[in-house]
Amino acid sequence: MAQKVTPRSQDFSRWYTDVVQYAELADYSPVRGSMVIRPYGYALWEHMQRALDDMFRATGHQNAYFPLFIPLSFIEKEAEHVEGFSPELAIVTHGGGKKLEDPLVVRPTSETIINAMFAKWIKSYRDLPLLINQWANVVRWEMRTRLFLRTTEFLWQEGHTAHETEQEARDEARLMLDVYAKFAEEWAATPVVKGIKTDAEKFAGAVESYSIEAMMGDLKALQAGTSHYLGQNFAKAFDTQFLDRNNELQYPYQTSWGVSTRLVGMTVLVHGDDQGLILPPRLAPHQVVVVPIISSEETADQVMDAGWSVTSALHDAGIRVTMDDRDGVRPGFKFNEWEMKGVPLRVEVGPRDLAEGNVTLARRDLGREGKQSVALEQVATVATDLLEEIQQALFDRAATFMADNTFYPATYGELVEGIESGGGFFYAGWCGSAACEAKVKDDTQATIRCLPFDQPDDPGPCIVCEQPGAHQAVFAKAY
RNA sequence: CGGGCUGUGGCGCAGUUUGGCAGCGCACCUGCUUUGGGAGCAGGGGGUCGCCGGUUCAAAUCCGGCCAGCCCGACCA
Image (cartoon, rainbow, N blue to C red):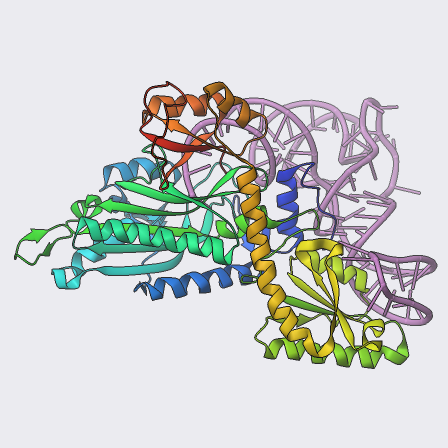
């Protein structure tokens, strides 16, 4: 623990892997492509869950739980859905020592099993809207995996809703995307671009997919959350029907939306530095760590007492605080260790501070320059303010970084050169053809991350074929 | 699934070319001295060298096969 990480500038990919492991967020497991989320990483995820779950409830959703196993025949009912997911399904063929007549799929997502139940529950327009969320694990058999960003099994949340009208469902899909954007920006301190996915990138079985896209520290894009307007595709496949206000049978309009433990990876990739993790205060398992500095026998008790009283003052102020009272570990070691773990604020309590009635506060995001002395009795109020400042500073820094690395190429040559010479987000016109989209991908590996909701009056000509552009698209390499 | 790299105490590696006592650093345990940015000294524990087979008096080392992991591609939250 607390080893030196590979510098970001030297090898970003290894830096990420080092930070995740050294900060004890996760570890590789004996199972191919699967990871163990360690207590510290899980605590971070739990804080994300809590914030999101509160927002889901505030928008009228209820939690429920559906089975892990889905009959293979269910997946096959929606043509695009099965086509999209079949390459990555884990399928159970045996149970109880016998071969199963109908194989079971380990859920890659739950639209089908949930619709099988919705078909039973939805009889009348009075049953709508039906607003369900579940927290669950899902399995997608990936070729290449990376801790948190892509693993065979991952934890997520999937919302599934059914509505009386198309407009209501479309509004719901957009509303939940807004919830995700709000979470990303206000909790994870990560600015995002909201937009519509192209047909090539949309969810298998959706009419339209929306996403939030964030820029990572290596200038690649990460899809941080998606929301889908499903139309009546699944309702028709599962014969989910209700009697409307005119006593006529109708198929409901549906949505689904999800975010995953990938958000943990995003937080690392956006804010971390060569010292390790930097956590936004609102999500940090420990917002403040108190490190006592014992320099002599005579002052030891006094320092420890002061450390504990600072700890309880911070706790009483509603701050998640921990006191590192380990014996036999030197303060310098503790500083580095808690910096590795991304704790936003550190309080150093030592004889020199106490002689003047002070403690030293050190901001994680400012490095060694970010220390200040604060009077003992003001620690709680100052720390409370600082945590808010840090939260804002992290967002501002990420927003500036994204703005600085967002470009508007005028020609195809500029787009290709821009992507190859470093990356970033490239806004450009796009005619809407799959061929032009594919050409960019073939030439540069970059894809259209989304067509932003914020569109200019004139998107300009297609960056590829120079035909009039139907949309402005964001091109970027993605995780 | 294609290409590359790697499997040796918990982690990182040397040793493999040229077969001959299984080593180093970190971590861990004990003790003492320490403690304001990754402590020092002394002592100690821990490894069927990825697996299976072959060659040999003798294999971490040579030969054959298999497996796993990571990185780069195609696919993807």
